[in-house]
Length: 273
Image 1: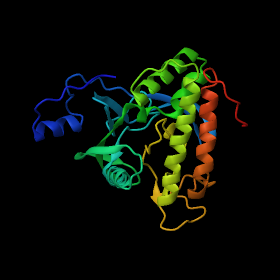
Image 2: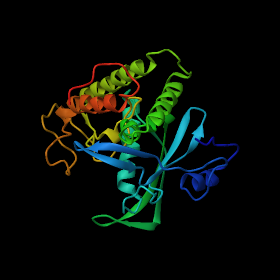
Image 3: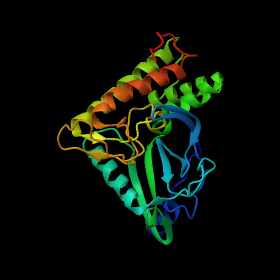
Image 4: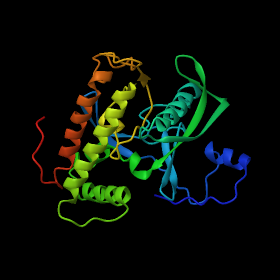
């Protein structure tokens, strides 16, 4: 992870950096690779198709969404539109102020000079998200290396998460067991808050849940004002897999997949799948 150098930058210059037209000193943009279970089916390689990590400043990672296609775009145009970017900006700030763990929106830049075709022609936008670096380590990141048999990388990733979550390197024998238990507790707390406030994520694939227990990837989300069984904000979810009332069950299912991905490191009973 590259370390950014930010000194005295005026407002116009900052707009250039946050729109992706210029790079901050020390920035080496990188798209992250991961795998994931999507709607219950495993996909062996996914990744940030329209987003890049710009770098890290102190404990904060800067993640720009809508910057154009990466090597993981899978044929997409790599763009985000202003409409959905405004939704993410507002929702992430609302979640933060409700006390729910989430990435936050640092900036939002629109470009009328760059039309994007969806169901209609829309305005392109880039939203820069900030969070601790481990917020961008997904359950599916561990699945990627585990399913490839790259167990050394699984351990390196786990040690990276431990160091960045707890601020130190742990050497105790059962540290990976404790990590999994902590991730499960954090995930449980997060979903409990979602259920309490009526937030429905909409796409709870294993590549859309991170290891720090915070909300990421605001896509077809929605809020319900009362407990509505079967509420589904994602029109692509034909089987209502990620309905509001199913979120606790799906979170537990995803954690079971993470447990399997960590199988080479931990000594706990295997989950029933």
